[in-house]
Image 1 (cartoon, rainbow, N blue to C red):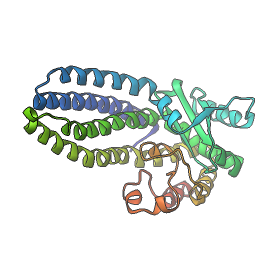
Image 2 (image 1 turned 180 degrees about the vertical axis):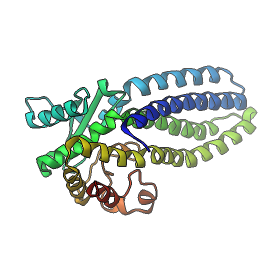
Image 3 (image 1 turned 120 degrees about the horizontal axis):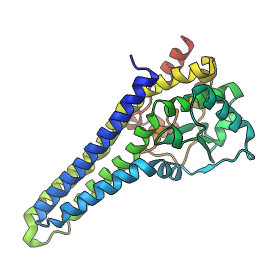
Length: 294
């Protein structure tokens, strides 16, 4: 059975396996690209890209995510109550206090990011602060602290960057096929086929990867967060309010949706077949049921 400690070890191991697989994939694509076009310099470029992107994804992926979601730092003077809640739960969890960020959105939601507990951050929306009671807000923050403690944040954040790079490369295959000269007509056709396959499969693969790392970790974070506050009902009520709110979080997209405590997609977007089929979160009703059974 997964625990806070076994999950942390598993997430660290999976992160480095994922990065290693990414490096191998990029170099492999570079070799294939260079073989088809008879340009072996492409292999060198692929190796450089793989190394640079792996470095950036590990050390700076949290900054990319915070920028993508429009999160800005919140000082203790700006919101002392929020800082007190985070400080108290950090002490309870035995973790360093994460940096706190605010997203200018009326949708109540939150996520955690960073490469380790010493370099972590929690981002909350204005809607979360305005619409939740203190015990409910504590439940949400404790959930995010659990993600930090079990190293979910590293794996989930790295995936945002690396999957995005793979998707961009698949598009490059597609575009490169149209610029192949006549001497490379055969190579151009092969690139076109690879590009089309990549354009179709890359987003699907990205979603499947996010599904694999997202659903079960939410149940574990709920349980761990409830143990921190000793009040599962607070988080259960928060999940009810967040899921019932229909405001749109405009800065959210499919690459970052798995980071949030509840899917940020609302209204028609949440009801679409694709969104429901590839949801990165377990059903809210099931999460609430498990919390109220604790």
